[in-house]
Length: 91
Image (tube, rainbow, N blue to C red):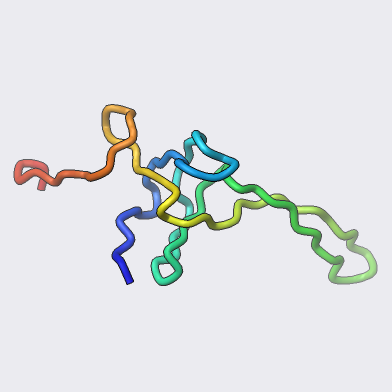
C-alpha cells in the first residue's frame, strides 16, 4: 500500500475522468482505499426516503470519492505540481 500524499484541505486539480480539469478543495480522504473526496467533483444524486409520514422524501446531491491517482496538488504558484518540496527554512 502506498502512502497517500494528499491531505484534507489541499487544493487539487483532476487529471483524469469526466471531470478532468476541474479544481477543488479536498474535503475527505480515505488512505486505506486510496481515494479522496473533492468538492464539486463527481457530484451524484441520492434519493432519501422519508423517515415518517409527515416528512417528504428528498433528492440530495453530494460528491463521491475518486481515486487519489487522478488528482494533482496545486502549488503556491497556482500551477499543478508533482512534488511538494519541504525546505529547511519553511519548517
